[in-house]
Length: 223
Ligand SMILES: Cc1cc2nc3c(=O)[nH]c(=O)nc-3n(C[C@H](O)[C@H](O)[C@H](O)COP(=O)(O)OP(=O)(O)OC[C@H]3O[C@@H](n4cnc5c(N)ncnc54)[C@H](O)[C@@H]3O)c2cc1C
Image (cartoon, rainbow, N blue to C red; front, side, top):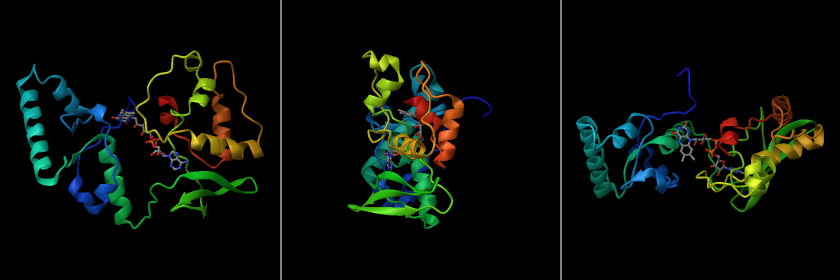
């Protein structure tokens, strides 16, 4: 699309994941109706119009019936939507290409070779391991929605006690931002924080470049 920012994910059949399925995170209960995750886009429109449109009522009936048949057969719904569908499809591709994926393995800090980020220290199976990067390190740890202290410093309304609930993963505690700051702080001036609480665009770019990293702006905006 030319406009907007959201991705609408094509539904994915969980059976294609095979044994990987048990490693897929659960969906947010807030986003389900009778256990069915309602897909963004057309599907959610049908659910909203269920009492006002015959076509939508028919769609919802078919969707719920399919879901309950799957629950009877497999013990869970197999039609994945939204982020679950995206994660599942990516997991399938990674497995098909024999790309190792370490689960429950938090990155702790970045490694540096002079001014260059050369890898990361990662906790894996109870051990801290140095993972060397040949080309670069991508920090995709989801902003800092669950780092209350940083949110207070960044957003005046949170500091004033008007913070809101965030349905983002509880594990998004700002590790990526912290790690980027740690290496940027040792190799460049700290970023100036203007009164409105956000670093200027150039500072953000410069910090990201210095750290050879990419910090998801969508995640930061969401935080
Ligand atoms: C309820 C809800 C509905 C949404 N619906 C849509 C939608 O329909 N379409 C759309 O386009 N967007 C949607 N979004 C927004 C979308 O989910 C986010 O923009 C997107 O997930 C951001 O991706 P990310 O990779 O930056 O962060 P995330 O997807 O949050 O992933 C960050 C990951 O990093 C992990 N992590 C954190 N710290 C570390 C560490 N130290 N080491 C290793 N891993 C770490 C976390 O555990 C987490 O798994 C929705 C968001 C919410 C909350």
